[in-house]
Length: 364
Length: 143
Image 1 (cartoon, each protein chain N blue to C red):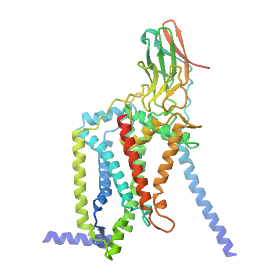
Image 2: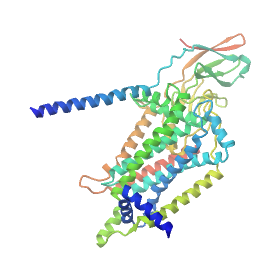
Image 3: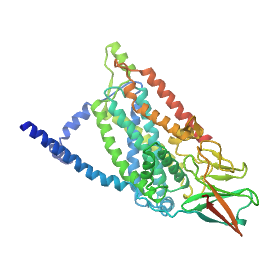
Image 4: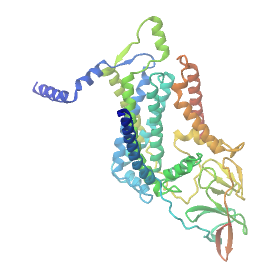
């Protein structure tokens, strides 16, 4: 009894200073649309959960990691062989990074197929797509940090792709590499991007993304909206707290189970130390989420007409990314009607391209 | 008149603020641009002994700060190229089974003259000259 009274007093003290009651009221009235596609809503939260795990395990790795070419590989080797549970922490960091990008992709495609990008949620879409880009930036910069052969060549290829961009390419590549070649300066820069620049940007954008979701609420698919409009009923809602929140927690728990199993059963490999004077090994390929562009570049001939194949590939990717980012703007016609069939068709085509080319890139 | 004075003040304040921001940004941007480190131009390197490489084999050697590929085509015939693939900067290797130069990153093939045979590389490899001086193999940049 006395404990309850003390808790209330503490809560009241904070209430008076922070106005927590308004937040409590907001949460109490927050609802989530209930329909057959509701489970897709959990993937955004799972992505957030995996991001938090990334930060936590990343902070742990920072206690031992040393970002220089002579020490980086050895320090990761030390983490996985000598530090207690070091192998597990590193494995969780690597696996959760990959799972986070996977769940972010699922979240993005579910938003597209449920048409949740429509007015007034254009900014939520844009902030989400940029967040996915930052997640891939995390992947690219973090990939180099163990300073192994695969990561070294992946960085050479990645920064050289940047160098191929007309006009801004060469200075951009120099900025990324910290010089003309991939070396110690690149490692230091990538470390800085990975642990300071990208987390800062991602946190700001994440706050914006979550605030927009809170402000605009969760969208219902047009099909569900139309069905209820025809019937003259409103879409059933589930209280966010505790109903949706507890379900989301269960999804996090399941994600943790999958992550823990993967990290323990398939510990992330370290590979061989990078040697700038060794040939790229046979079978070299990037992380799975870069496989589709990797295989596309492999297929392109040296020249297509007067243009270099590599440049044509980059132009194609740029057009694809711009088209995808601007989806909310062409996904609705001038009269304000949704082009749901067009969007679905484009999304299916993109998904088919990504899956097919990633599989081909992996197996061929 | 007071309106004009206000407009002038706005311009002065806005201009001053913009100039301040630019004066902060300029050194920051300049700082991010890595300085050019002068590198001694390498024109010649020793690539080891003649006996260290069997016919129909190749090896990567340091040519300054960059890798070069030395190939012993036969007992008497040698070739050397920059080992940097002209596609996306990976390091190539000699494939003895096909007697071609191969880039594992995107499956680009060059022939023993450094010319592109197949795959995405847009240009031939830069060729170096190989000299045998007694027992030593020396690679030099072509002028």
